[in-house]
Image (cartoon, rainbow, N blue to C red; front, side, top):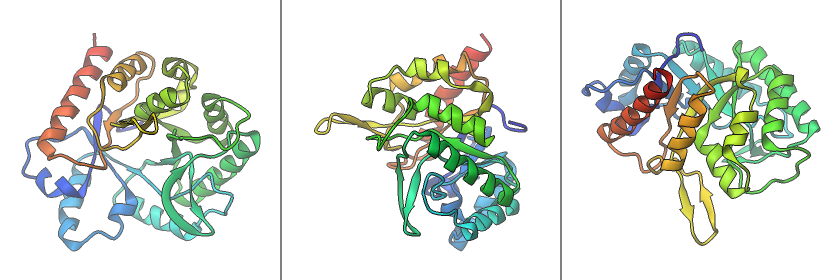
Length: 273
């Protein structure tokens, strides 16, 4: 991605006011538009100082690109206004759906991996891009059941990207979680992914639910060793920026900075060895 290099961190309100006082600064920030479009006044100045001091990307939650319903054009126009206001060139969303009868669930739900859905998503991607006047970047999501599938997840993603022209946000943690929950090889997924579409990558934490016997993508835990190892494997094939997402149980900025530095050391070791 142009002007986006190195390692990033998701900017959160819980530590926003500490950013200016801290010696730590990531190479770039990622922000969630829905959380900042109507922010309290107390955060406005600090938010602007942060996003204008570093390259910044936007990662949305409620586009619902995989819904059978029409795109909410009013919402997409609000997204464009946010992107324009803060001079954000890159906007990513989830390859999933989250809306029912025009109402948001704010849950990222799985979509059928079918040829018909490839066409549906592709048409909506083009509609969104016409409004935001930017490429749309789609993230591979976690899922705990598959409504219906005509193809493997990696083949479905590849077809969506090829037909729509969208770019990809590769979430390493999501690949790992899905591979364990659905019994496929995470490294094979990485091997078979069309690398040319990848714009940037996510790292995050998850936890194991013993009662349900599944891994849950919580974004509320430190990154585990299996996900670190998968990142290292992926970096040998993909030369894209990578960042850490933390949305729950958010620790102080100092603690997040330590995890960020661990990631940066892995990136530097693999890429510059």
